[in-house]
Length: 146
Image (cartoon, rainbow, N blue to C red; front, side):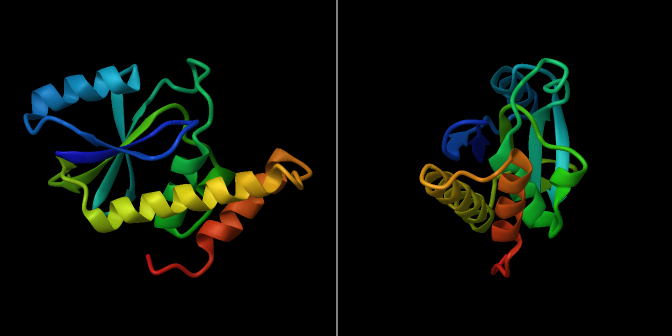
C-alpha cells in the first residue's frame, strides 16, 4: 500500500506499507516509534502519529501541521502542532488504505512551499517562530486547487 512519510526534518517521502492490517500496524508502530494514533484532517486520508510524541520530546512537524491546516482550511497550529514522524495513508472504513496520488501531490506541494520559505529565510529570517508560522499559514491557505 502506498503512503507518505513526513519527518520533522526532511522531504516528504513515498513509502510502501503492508496490505495486511496486523502487519501494517506493526510497521506503523516501528516507523513512528510508538503506538500509532489516527489524525483525521481530510475525509480521504489519515495521518498516523505517535500519540506520545510531545511527552517524548519529539520536535514539531511543521510540514505535517501545515498540510493538516491546508486540508482543514484553517490554522490547526493555533491549537497544537503535530510532533515527530507522521505517516499519511488513504482512509477507508475507518482504517488505512492506499493514498490517492492527488492527496500525495498536495502533501508534496505543501512540502515545497515550506521548503521554499525556509530557503528565503536564510537571507531574511522572520522576526520570530510565530512570524514564520504565520507566513507558512498564509502561503498554504492561499487559494489552492485543493
